[in-house]
Every structure is written in structure tokens, then in C-alpha cells.
Length: 320
Ligand code: HMG
Ligand code: MG
Image 1: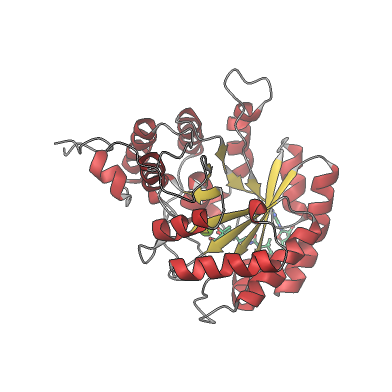
Image 2 (image 1 turned 180 degrees about the vertical axis):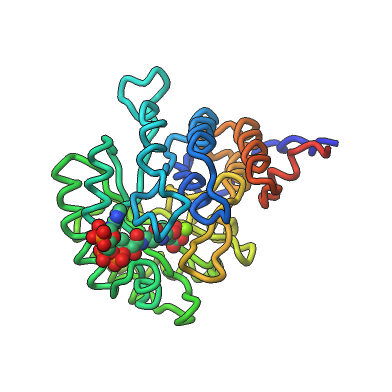
């Protein structure tokens, strides 16, 4: 039996009329798969996500292939999907951001014509060390020429900030640490910051408090995105809290794929389908066709050989 359709949308007070979804499935999702997904399957995944109406699809990472072997095919993958981002693409051009940790990564991305890159910092020393082999400040120093050169070349530069709400080695993370690194990323020239709950421990009151602390420190809320992993089932509640605080860009991963190979206990991201179900129900525009997206995640789950962890995907998929 198929699940019933979405009930009549009912808006709620204090929420934005539209939300931009920053889809991270092909990058955050697939970087954590135990098996390496073939490049042509990844390319098809990106195309299907774009076809479902996702206007931003984070495609891959130009990191050290030994650190993330799952994305070692970054150049081939980006080449296979780059036409989607072309300004003269017959469909609306899709934004295809890629992660670059350093100038080597930026050089690789520039060579292939990337127009949007992301650096990725940490609010904690332990994760900076585990993920980037650097202290927080030496990682920021590594990003400085990346952001500068990318901006000079006319690229958009996103700044991720991991472990904003808790860290598996250090426990609680003071909001002041988040504020300090956010300010540093903005000062480097990032156009947008994505606040990561890398291990999915945040709860909604904490999200409101961290966003308020950033606001008080002069970080404009319109420059912020939220990036929730769903380890404790809090990602959607945390997203609603962020929307109530004025955030309008939300990271999510089709089918709830995801995690981080360098943070124990990091599980999948907020599932894009669960997010779209909530946004549709609230009458908030996202431009995403939920049926096409669910079909994409079902298709991808078959390639990965396991069912999608997304509740919405499961509810909308007819039983075999
Ligand atoms: P390192 O070992 O300190 O690198 O790693 P290095 O600078 O000393 O260089 C060593 C060798 O690596 C050199 O080669 C470089 O050329 C090469 P050699 O001279 O020895 O032959 N190298 C590269 N090769 C290809 N592409 C590159 C590159 N850079 C150096 N870009 C490094 C430092 C940053 C490279 C490494 O730590 C790394 O690649 N880390 C990436 C980790 C990662 O991708 N993690 C997952 C993404 S972050 C995440 O998931 C969190 C997020 O989702 C938000 C959230 O949830 O919180 C974004
Ligand atoms: Mg992540």
C-alpha cells in the first residue's frame, strides 16, 4: 500500500516563504559509503537530483584521495556533470559546489571550471586535527589564499564550520568558539557559512541560542546555512528552530545518506525528502518535486544495496 499524500498545507507564523536547499548527497552522502560508487552512477545521481528541482547540488570534493578514497574520482565526476552548471544549459543552470581544503584542491577545481567552492573549518581543535591534520588556526591560514584566489577568479566560496553543537572528543562546544571561527571565515571572504552539527547531537533550544550568539556578534543570519546530521533524530526539529530564527538555506542529503569518515558517531544528514515533506506541509516553497526526489533515492538505494534511512522515502515507497 502506498502512503497517503500530503495533507492540505498549513502555514505557521514566523517562517520564511521559501527555503533554498543545498543538496549534499553526492558529496557528504557518498564520502561515507563503505563501497566506492562508480563514477557513472554518481553522475546519474547528480543529474536526477537536478532533475528533481534541486538548484544546488554539492558534487564532490577535491581533497587528498588517500583521505577520502570514495571521492578520488572527483575530476571525472565533475567533468561528467559540468554541463548542468553551464550558463547556456537548456534547463536552469544548477549550482555545483565542490569542497577544496587547500590551494592544491582549488587548482584542481579551477582547472575543470568550477564556479563555487567550499572550505571546511572546525570549531574544535580535535576535529581540525582529525579532518585536516591542522590546528583550527593553521587550517584557517591554509584557507586564506584559497578564498582569496577563488574570489579573484569570480567564484563563490562557502565556509563550512563543523562541530558547532558538540564534539565527540571534546564534548560541549562553547558558542564563543563557533562565533570566533565564523567571524574568521567571513573575514577571509566566504559569502556563506554552513553551521555543521557533524555528529547530530544538537537540540532545538541550542540551535536558537547559537544563532542568537552569532547574530549578537554581528554575523548576518542571511549569510548562514544549517547542516544537521540526524544521529539522534533531531535534524528536522533543529531545522525548524533555525527557520524560526531567520535561516533560509538548509543543507540536506537525498535519502538521508551521509556522515563523516573523520568523526566517529557521525551518521546520515537530514534527509532531503523529510525536509521537503515538512516544507510542503508548511506551504514553504523549495522548488523540489518530492515524487521525483523519492524515486531518485529509491534508485540510489538499489545501487547501494540497502534501503534509504529516510522516513519519508520509506513511507512513500510501495512495499515490494
Ligand atoms: P596532509 O597530509 O596534511 O597534506 O593532509 P599535505 O598538505 O601535507 O600534503 C601531502 C600530500 O598530499 C602532498 O603530496 C600533496 O600534494 C597532496 P606529495 O607531495 O606528498 O606527493 N595533497 C593533495 N592531493 C590532492 N588534492 C588535494 C591535496 N592536498 C594535498 N587537495 C589535507 C591535508 C587537507 C589534504 C587532508 O587532511 C584532506 O584531504 N582532508 C580532507 C578530509 C575530508 O574530506 N573530510 C570530509 C569533508 S568535511 C565534512 O564532511 C564535514 C561537513 O560535512 C560539515 C559537517 O558535517 O560538519 C563539511
Ligand atoms: Mg556533514
